[in-house]
Image 1 (tube, protein in one colour):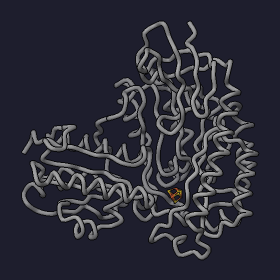
Image 2 (cartoon, rainbow, N blue to C red):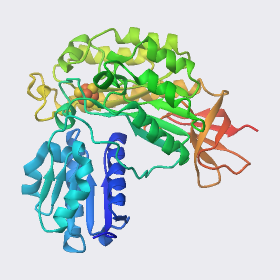
Image 3 (cartoon, rainbow, N blue to C red):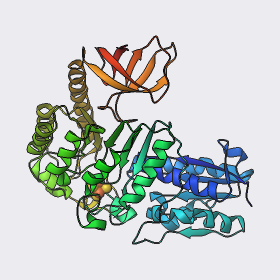
Image 4 (cartoon, rainbow, N blue to C red):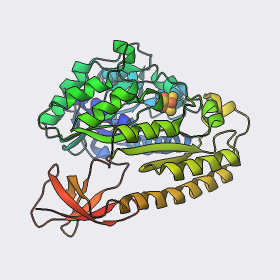
Length: 439
Ligand code: SF4
């Protein structure tokens, strides 16, 4: 059985990507070999996203596309992740080419599932697990100089629009030493930047150690010699406190960057969303006061049930007043099985679309104004790639991979991905910067 070729397709966010890399590590250890060509693979794994409707539709289309290969060499089509956890039997019934289903908590069982299917069975591993599987092997697929590290899975919050806690179960922190071990391996393999991910990174440790341990984890990661930056993604406003901000300010390797999805600002809407309705403006002010120069990223939902024009105008005012550095806005997606799906006051799609477009136009202006303030500044930039024409693309500490913009710059010297260079900013674009490298 060993030596069989497998192909894998990963969709969705960085958290899902880490799961896919774990599946690849497990299959590699079990003797399977990756091929980028689905037509050559005997085993095809798809790890799709089920977070909201559009992602789910894209996922189903991708499974159907891959199912075509069952007419050729492919003997096993395995679907992993949130989608099987959510739709279980339906996937088997409606896509007969699917042979195996595995939920995020059971990824360590992927090689076993594949073997069972190769022997002719249809199999699933979907049971909830109280404790996460021990550290899983991982085959990194991103550029070696930048890696995601998943510090926990699941979520203890009860946001009324979100299906994730039902799919991934309660919050499960990975042991601190295990995360450090993985970080050390990634740095030894060339990672200069680590990006911490979880459903809520700021909750880290509360379940396992009885207290928030993100500050301690950051201090330990900051001792890794060849690491340049560690960045916190997916925090939660309820768990940002003085201790965390102090670590961000004091530790040079911890990026002064915080990704804090706020979802809305109007108290009525936040309560209906099941999120703390604390003073978000005061929290952002505290972040800025304790960590001068901090870059703040957030996401917001428009068109949540009950969002009236006055709530939406309040949101626009908040966005304008706070001028957050990076903002994503999404239209509310009515997800079956979530409390908000049954709320009265559902907003019409046309209205959601209009609010989304209007908010995005405002945010583009805010982003441009923020970038203009950087013109003339010198930034340390992590080189990402060489562009056509001989220029380079990189990111400074205020730009997270994939979701934020880039710094495009020229350099007479040849540079490699992972190099850190000083770049003087010469021009601001809506989301990107242009500059030139300094000697
Ligand atoms: S914090 Fe809220 S939105 Fe995020 S995963 Fe948990 S329940 Fe979902």
